[in-house]
Image (cartoon, rainbow, N blue to C red; front, side, top):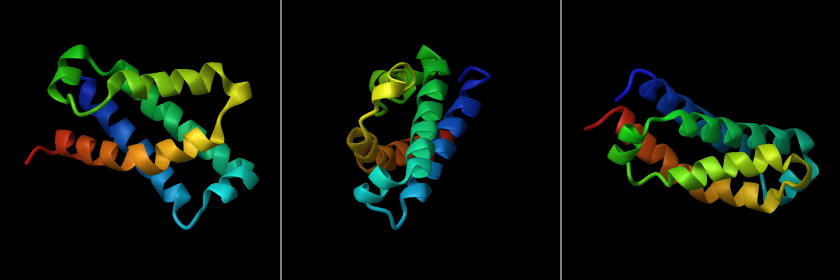
Length: 112
């Protein structure tokens, strides 16, 4: 791994875990009504994507289970389409994509 890659991977897992903590006990309806929750989840996804964009190609190749292009693409959609964020997609991403991402990142950071 390049020098900054372990740090970037930790940033990814930390932000993903934080997003998962934010939705504990929440529903998609809560997200639609709670602007603070929505902004928090969007920011976490932006951090995950920004950190992913800085991970070297060499390290990306060693963790092929992560859909790097999709992770960075989500960040780009959120940043550049800030005025038209699909909260259903945010909810789905946090609920369905972040748990396996966290598991994969944890294995990469602390190989067994």
